[in-house]
Amino acid sequence: MEFKNVTTANEQFLWKKLINGDDDAYSYFYKKYAKELFSYGSRFTTDRDLVKDCIQDVFVRIYKNRSRLSDVNDVRLYLFIALKNVIFNVFEKDKQFYCIDTLEPVFNAEYSIEDEIIHDELIQEQREKIKRILEVLPPRQKEAIYYRYVKGLKIKHICTIMNMNYQSVQNLLQRSIKKLHSVFVEKNQPAYKLRKGRYY
Image (tube, rainbow, N blue to C red):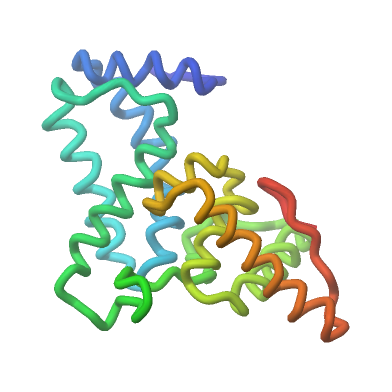
């Protein structure tokens, strides 16, 4: 069965079907999010095979434990957090992947070559701009900006995925924007306005 034009509310319904053993619902989530999860996971490591293995691990765990899963309000966020946790567990004993200040794998701004093919040169130029923007930030700030302004996540969701309180995330975003302003504006570089889910 193919699901089309699925809204967030519909995804919550499909998640319930997955919990109840519906294989079509399970396949829907894998097909919809596997590629995006690969792109996301590739921001923590350049090991493509490792990212693929971690994604498989996430979905195998979901399949095996689905009868014990709880309802979720945002499946996409749930999968992001699940993948991040699996990757961090893999890196737990490998300190070369960690930031000194956060003890977490380094978040980077590179786009994987398996991101969707960009035919529009303007879109490609915009991606290059945001890559340059993120490169000037330390990993923790880079990650927060990515969630807020590239993925368009709400601050409360960033709190969950980064395991931080609301005020701390706000402060992190403010410091990040201040840093970007000092680099791009004060040095007469092109200024990019950041808005949730978009960049200019």
